[in-house]
Amino acid sequence: QVQLVESGGGSVQVGGSLRLSCELSRSGYSEFVMGWFRQAPGKEREGVAAIDSDGDTRYSDSVKGRFTISQDNYKNTLYLQMNNLTNEDTAMYYCAAGGGSYITTMHRPLNRQEYAYWGQGTQVTVSS
Image (cartoon, rainbow, N blue to C red; front, side, top):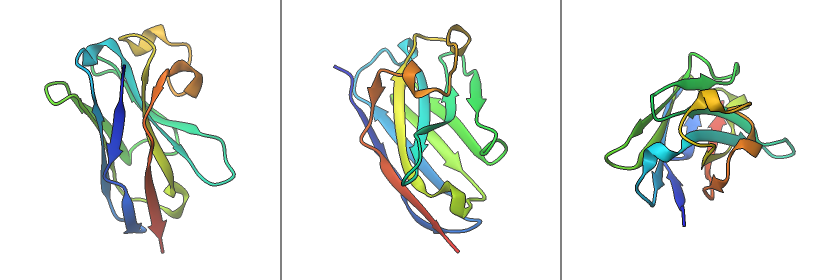
């Protein structure tokens, strides 16, 4: 059984920063490509960033240059550093695991259908 638990969400002003964490409950972290997704009210869940066991990463255009995905394999923890936040970043953020070990083996690394395991989410609210 794989369990993912997110933390680190909260309220922040425009231009501020937050770091999200996601703890994976089982070992064998390198077995998965890990991803961050977000879903705003009334919108589809969209992929934000992904990382694989080699450290290869992918970002959506909307967050490229502002967000950084990373992982600590010893702590079984995934991170999302979010800088220069805007109102459009307000959403529930989810971490996910799936798709083998390497991004290059995925058809669409930022598509939710590539991921089998999901956390419960953590809310990020950005206000002016």
